[in-house]
Length: 255
Image 1 (cartoon, rainbow, N blue to C red):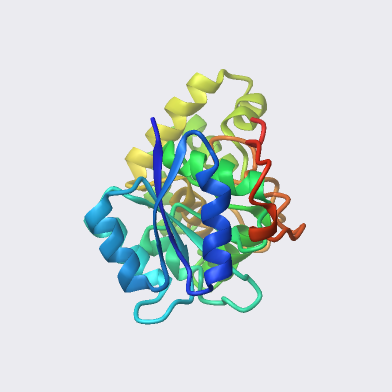
Image 2 (image 1 turned 120 degrees about the vertical axis):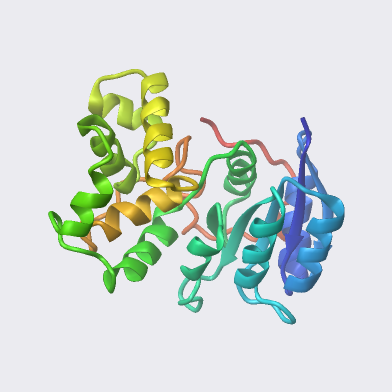
């Protein structure tokens, strides 16, 4: 199956660079490149892609509002593009429905892997970006562990499901959770599905937020690895690489 992608960024070099990297993949097709959020919403509505890469800061309609509209009206999954140091409000995209975050200097292999992970229905959080954002977001609303709200909300979970949520909040992949609980990955997938269903959560990103908001994990805890159903797709995003300059010779990241 070909993964159809819309790339939205008001910087033409960034936009075209990402598109070039993705378009050389056998299983990915960039169906549109646009320069603002309103155009991104229109492109998603008309072309029905599987994934939309959205810059946080764009004219006409910013990336967060575009993300909110896209996730509310279509089945398209969204990934936010950010220069973290200046995009302090990007964590608002978590509740707007974003399925992941990538730094704009993401390495080419990690960009490709991220698109595949999100298209497969998983969520993706790079430790260098999203965990810090989540902690900032939840710091003002986090409840102390053992509070009435925590007990009431988490009371629907079994002991093993609560353990699973704890590991999700710490950023472990399914394989790592399986190792920690000494169970199979299939069993972990079942536990994760039960946690999301019982708590009314859309994806693993919301599970991480829930772990912080209920006090299961204290804000400020040190992150472990990326949150996704596979190993980190952008754990090495801190090593800059120009998309436009790296658009050839791409090979997918290993699992």
